[in-house]
Length: 579
Image: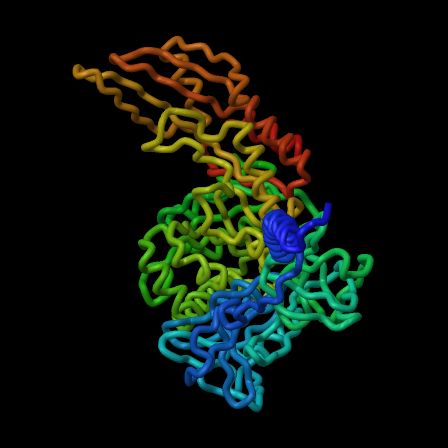
């Protein structure tokens, strides 16, 4: 039988149609899959907007908009350039580069107080004074623009272990303050630094083979790095060499603070002097406070917003103390003025220097051995000015062989106004006032429980106070708490200060017996009288021995006691046995 040609062609067409119906969907699926795979597994070549990355919003502004990179961080603040000199705002200089610079916004003066000299620069000047010596630069050191002080980085670098370089497109300053051993890697050919870890993340910069990258964090497939020109991002582990370490040493000599250190354990007490006539009691005071080697009379107090002080000092008092082998560290307080007066004085360089000079003059006039600063700081706006005051005063004291000590509360969340580490740097001794755990207006409790005092020592050491120059201040008082319930069911808590020497009389008068309270490490007693429950945590030989053991175990410099005249002979004997 002969096949008809048209039928053959028809069958072939039908086969082709069937094949096409099968192939086209497969091809489409394959194409879609291929596009998906390419999109998923092919690295992105998209470049990040670098102006946005560095936070540059107006690169054409008159003052410039220069990004600042410090180590691993791109700052929100910007630098400016003028006549080839680069400037950073004071706050950023203080926060990131060197917090020993102090800006007096009232008198427009930049100050750097080192261990032995004070450097002062007036805004808009190319000269500065180191004490009384005039020095000059070939640039304006501090520019004051629109209420902001900008400091030349070249000037900052004179006092700071740092280096910096400027780069363009976009304009940025890259500053390194890192020292010591750092981890690095080298870029391989084709290495790119991306904004995030992943091949689809935007590219920040493309590396040349051998480019140095500082390792910030090593992950499974990516490593966070910093380039020398200021990019902080991620590079594939396949595109970098093995890690290695390098030591950064710019040869910068950090300032060294010398301290007056006594060759004996400090046994100090404060002597509450409220009138010049009270100085005549020094002989009996020394007799009752046997064993002390330092006495701190409460003689000096800020008296005006101009930086003047009242003085109750007496030369005969000092002579009597010296005759008994006891040093005199005159106390200076701000307790007679409010925070606004303290802030006004300390934040004006002229007034602050006046206060420093009258303190020094009094110390010299009365032949004092030291100064004890007892400033209560409860306002963050005073913090920087207070530490500047202590820095500057420390130089005057050091030059005149005067011990400088500063009283501070226990370092906790309520006392963040004190720069503990810097106080330890510039003071000879830091006196830790380990009392007033509970106080008038608080709930009833111990004035200074032993666990609280212990953790306070540890917290203060952790904040940078050197234990060997910390004096533990202990209370010679406690509080008698009265807890009463009103007719409406409300509870009232009041307290009175009770001296160590009178607490036993109170217990005897009410036939109360004390028992040991393990939670506070103190003896505790309570009794009922006048429709109230009375509670008292005793300051006695038990608690004092625990405090002395803390002093010994942490290697502290000694003990200070608030205050003379409130103690018992038993307590003094116990302290003397340790010191």
